[in-house]
Amino acid sequence: MASLDYPESFRELVKQLRRLPGIGPRSAERIALWMLRSPDAKPDQLAGAIGRARETLRTCRLCGFFAEQEECALCRETAREGGELCVVETATDILPLERTGVFRGRYHALGGKLSPLDGVGPEHLRIGELLERLGQERPKEVILALGADVEGEATAHYLAEIIAPTGVPVTRIAQGLPAGGGVEQADQVTLHRALAHRRAY
Image (cartoon, rainbow, N blue to C red; front, side):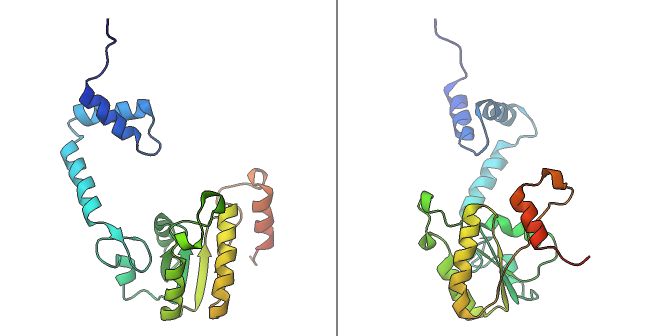
């Protein structure tokens, strides 16, 4: 006697949903059931939105953020001061910084970080484009807003070295205790940086 299972079309939908990051078999099944049975799901609209996004979204030629034209809304913003250039690892790092409302300069997403073990070298990142922008825009400061892991530190060090000959000052975002965090939960590296980069209160 054959074991009972969902129809082939449903299994295919679950299989495709499982390809999404962070979606396991049970989650994929629940999402598929919701999409097919809930009156709020509107799967045709979802499919249309995915198709339109795939068709219209591109990478901004300047900063690497998401755009529907050659340049993104941030790079087209004429009121933006642009005196500082903030370098981030990926395009998704730009919005959290922008939403703080503190930074009014321009951004440059590298598209990753140096990771020799994974075969990611300088030629795989948007470092050439960064150097080209430095020559054209001549910012008054380059801010490295990269991760504090080993690869992020290596990338920051590499960038500082290759930017030095241009004469543009390079800074690194401060690192320390997160808001709401206590000293007892912090690791030694975080505490070291918090102490080393302390400021007057």
